[in-house]
Image (tube, rainbow, N blue to C red; front, side, top):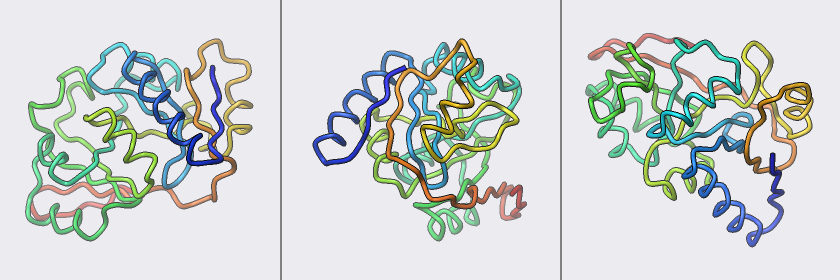
Length: 197
């Protein structure tokens, strides 16, 4: 488990390069998000997703949302109604997840047997740099063990995982994050909106 501290622009560029190498090789990266620290993996690598679920000790039938870099990229993987487009244009980038019908451009093993997908365009420049660098969506899920609270520092993360055999591969340490509210989640079916959180 490698921890890389981000305290300057030079650190940022090197950290980004290393994180992308880990993602391309199927690893799990911990990174700061708009809300808390999160886990990112390449959704087009089945083994990376498997590793994520094992790491979080998360039930395999629990769906995971994805980060995208633009509305155009989101529309490539999901079907956006007029209402979903309006919400996206108002709430993105930022702590808003929109759940819409998925398209066949997503691998079937990702969120298997679930016909919808949650999308988010983060405000965080680091999150966007990871998605843009990989040139495809990444998972967006909190970096904690399933059932435990979200983490806002690498120390919090280390405490949760100190007794665990499986640990994240690479950690981007941006220090203590401000405790923001979790992202709002809305499911949009045609032009009906259903708040989830």
